[in-house]
Length: 156
Image (cartoon, rainbow, N blue to C red):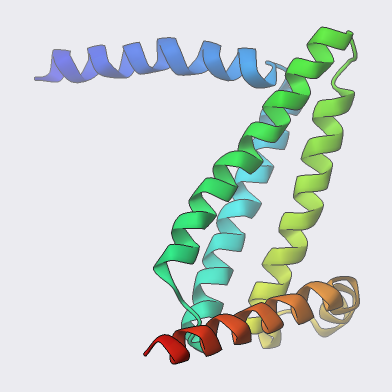
């Protein structure tokens, strides 16, 4: 059994690592950027899930859609890297996609954390700056949550 597990791990690594390097590149900056993006997406999921449970807007179909959105978001930088390779650019399109996704994800994560009631745990001066930065994101998330809640109540 142990030999089979080692073989499966080796085969997976032999397939996944070259695939990652082909899709995204192999520089330390690329690996770190993608790790940071995945980290903040996970934090956004965590804060969004908790906020939805607290305000009563949790819906499994919205979560399932989130899986597809996340998969799409993680493929965008790969497309950027491939375009960089075709055009001969040194990671510019990749960087634009990663920066844009990181900006959106951090805004969403912060808005979700505020909705979840975690604002008291954040330093006030930083929270004020973040709140100003994400004010429109918070408003749109609250509006969307209230609409989903009203739709669910109508269905019941």
